[in-house]
Image (cartoon, rainbow, N blue to C red; front, top):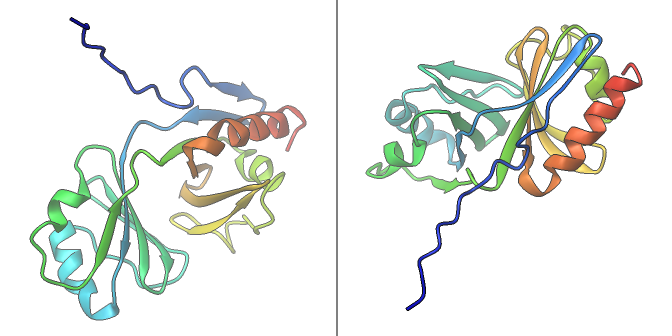
Length: 182
């Protein structure tokens, strides 16, 4: 009789750490991620069910009780929660919406320190000045050859959401940019 095998999911960036002059790169903790789409009429009901007000202004985010909602488009949000699965809160909702659990598709890198914006700009053409991309700002953009969701969590802390398959490339590119001084 064959023995049962246990498969353990390994964080795609396990063991990746970088600390340099003015910047640190850290894999973010595992999180639940949900891609949510809905018409504007459904936003109030979904916001109530999720416990976080879905932002309606481009490039903005809202965080309430550990759950974050990032505006990605007129009818699209990325939900991130490190403790509770947003899909569970959407189960019995009658409001028209489409929700997909993308927790295993994505991972994230935290880029922090006074040189964080410069390091990110080595591969991302977006203006990351505080005036153009302040705290809480988020957008879908590119980093090198990878599509990312970029979110400024604090003045000198960014979260880069990226597909797992591109995470090593993005982390390596960030580390190289940090070594080169942004």
